[in-house]
Picture 1: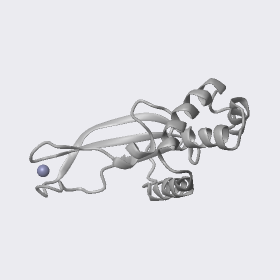
Picture 2 (picture 1 turned 90 degrees about the vertical axis):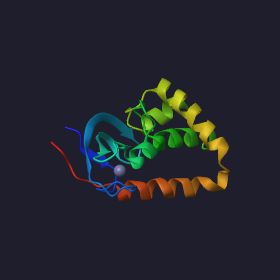
Picture 3 (picture 1 turned 90 degrees about the horizontal axis):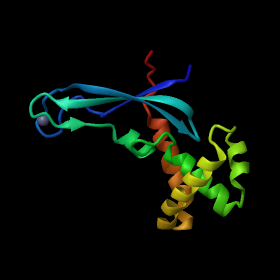
Picture 4 (picture 1 turned 45 degrees about the vertical axis):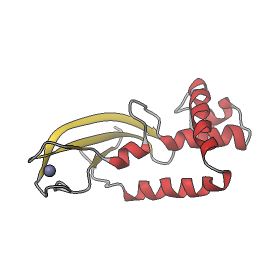
Length: 144
Ligand SMILES: [Zn+2]
């Protein structure tokens, strides 16, 4: 069984009106990440009991794009491996214990390269640090 991690908006009250947030719905999805492996993300979307605004977990949204199984860190790792370290897609796939196919490495590393093009090369360690600190902040409560 793969681990489950709960993501939710960090506050219990609405930032605008201070009313309590109530559970709106729970979404479950499988995420494959480079630093955390495979896990089930349980996203508890909350709703302001007063004016109905929905509150999502910005942390989950920063870890993985909507409707994508592979976390952003896999994309960055694949892109760096391929375009900076010069590994082939099959070598990267093997390096990730074949949890990701060679053709997916190709697709994701192309997408990751678009992201890397937008940031200067010296920012890559900072980007990686930022991702690692995000991961450390995650509330590790499990849910069965
Ligand atoms: Zn409110």
